[in-house]
Length: 148
Image (cartoon, rainbow, N blue to C red; front, side, top):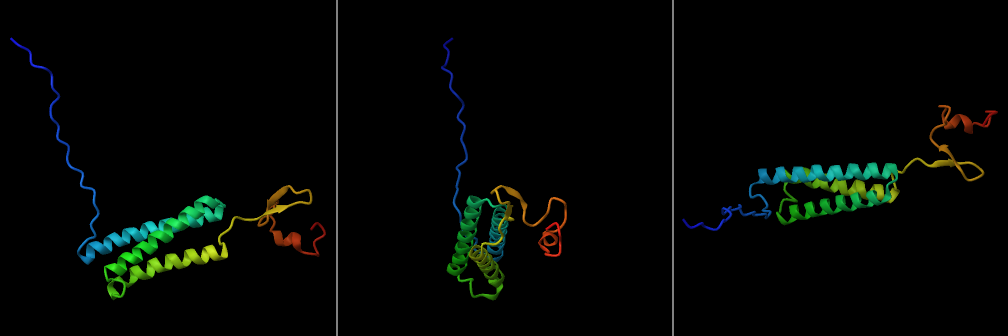
């Protein structure tokens, strides 16, 4: 009896067809654009959070990603000839609003982290918006206040 050489069984893997096709019906296209808009709004919220906490590099990355995604979405709507149709006006307005809000926020540098109060020696005391005792900062700025 002769032995046959050991062979691994043949396993056929499915072909991965990774290609993106723009949906043909407006309903499918609208669902896709709603998901893209949700991602765009999420990027905008991450931008606002990074700006509020003073994380400059993350603020820049989120701003660039959100603007690029909004502009590409508007270009897709333009090339699909949906930009002037009333059924997709909410998409155009939403993407335009995200771009507008981001540009205004970048222009006026809002939001910013709370500035730190500095004593005469150059060390940081506390945030300028609150006093460690819990009193408001306005009370210490009052000229009638003897402690201020």
